[in-house]
Image 1 (cartoon, rainbow, N blue to C red):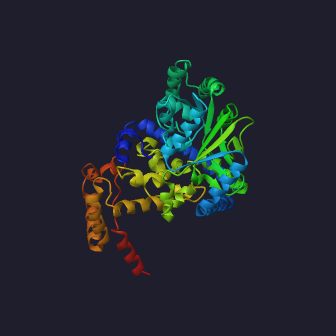
Image 2: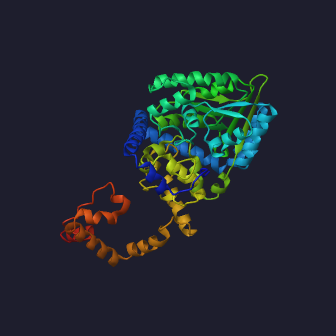
Image 3: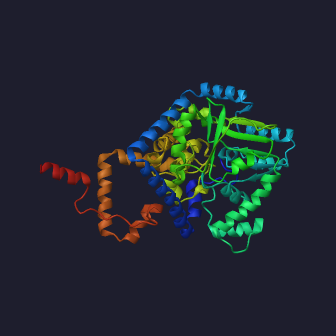
Length: 463
């Protein structure tokens, strides 16, 4: 899942993004707005009921993963009854070969594609383009970053890192909109005119899958723009790409998960379009490609497996203080943020992603299926430490820090010296010792009463 190109640590990539402080502040505010909308949507249901729905969603996904083989076989059998052709791919290479084989068989020259993080994971677009097939992403955000020749920076709002003025300039250059125009309504209309031509001239359509319903042999696709429906309903060939973790047992499960998906993503009661595809159109073909691509490997670890309870709402990214101020492109993986660390930290060649986290637990708190993201990230740190794959520097100083923190006398002596230095020495002299942490923060004031331990002993003795 690692991005193609120069490999650098999260800290190094984040430092580049943080040079533009105005953009960092804007990015942080935009994502926190989504988090605030999520809270309002959750509160509109009621705290107790919302927590019950989250628990139910967690139970459904956990049960499905625990019985994955059974549900995958049930899904395939019911798909075949509905006239759907199911393909199995063990990795990204097989997925891309299957898709290309289908397109070549039907002499497809242009493919319209709705939002799909799996096809991004498999790098399908460049694979097909190299083989002479034009690929048009039809989700507005995805089309923006495709025109800008970038991967998505967020799993739900892929162009969140770009300002409307930048999109306006991009559209002027690529699709001929008015120069200097940055009105979102105008730009959206221009994108609609531009994409409509591609919908009408496409030879095939491909979508991602939000849920695959085992009992029905059907897939559920949730969008706000209707682009998946527009794409699928015109050409004769429709293809749906999905990870094997997208399986749910029945329509009751769909009802539970769709109730939390949009609320947790954008604060909506529901996505605008929730479409169930259960068979090919008259005279057409419907294909589903189910992909492993390392999922079953992670399933072997009980805690890591819980990452695949995720329904890709993006709520953990919106609340994460690290992601909001470092951007999606600072992560050495296609999927950024807490969920990206959870599913990709093992593939991170810099071994730095697991440390792109404060372990504050906010991601776990907002997750609609109760994925224990902070525990998973901490678990990845232990795995890297056990395998001697700590990021540069940590392998040298962390053992020393561990010994220091593990010795009561050394810790008390060191903290006493630090409190004394904070009282006596000027901040300009002390700040460099804090490294990056104190670059944008003030030093704490040293307590006048000594350490907490001293305060506790004194007050406990007085009782």
